[in-house]
Amino acid sequence: AQSVTQLDSQVPVFEEAPVELRCNYSSSVSVYLFWYVQYPNQGLQLLLKYLSGSTLVKGINGFEAEFNKSQTSFHLRKPSVHISDTAEYFCAVGSSGSARQLTFGSGTQLTVLP
Amino acid sequence: SQTIHQWPATLVQPVGSPLSLECTVEGTSNPNLYWYRQAAGRGLQLLFYSVGIGQISSEVPQNLSASRPQDRQFILSSKKLLLSDSGFYLCAWRGGRAWNEQFFGPGTRLTVL
Image 1 (cartoon, helix red, strand yellow):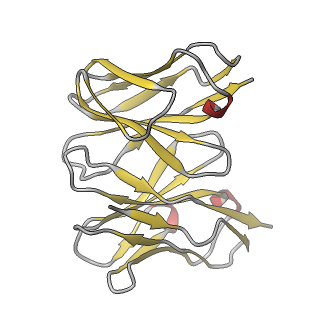
Image 2 (tube, helix red, strand yellow):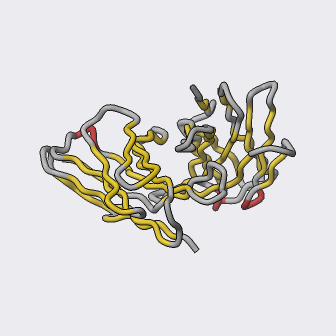
């Protein structure tokens, strides 16, 4: 069974400051990890994904995440946030079954303050 | 390119009424299709997934059902809505060689009164 824990439900941060959104996972099989972003009343958009290879993954909008197998973490970072980054962020782990399901965390609301 | 549509965008229904939400995908064939529900202040809960026409798997027991009458059409239904069915319903698809990556529709906001 797989699970994802997003440790912070809300993260307020000032504009141009750095931010880290934390994600820990548990999985008994090979790990495939994702970060999605959701703007109000919209669907989810993929930010980045880790399938294999380099543990530092770069995504869209200046975000990056680092896969840490020993700590079972996949934290999302951005060195300088903008007002437009205000959204909800979801971490997810993928299964290797035929349906290739995703298990999502409960989400982190990032609010960028002026 | 592929696109995914959901309708309606918003819906207000009384308790006990039926429900039908539709999701269609364009530009791909034989996708895996998924229905999620997002309740207020909570994460995404996988409700159903389908790997082919007529093949539906349910993840949680509930008041809802799903059907896949065509390759790129996925329908979420209920015979009698409950207050607890309120939420934001998202359809997603996965296909091709994109390992596990799912693409989401714009969602349907359902309010049951």
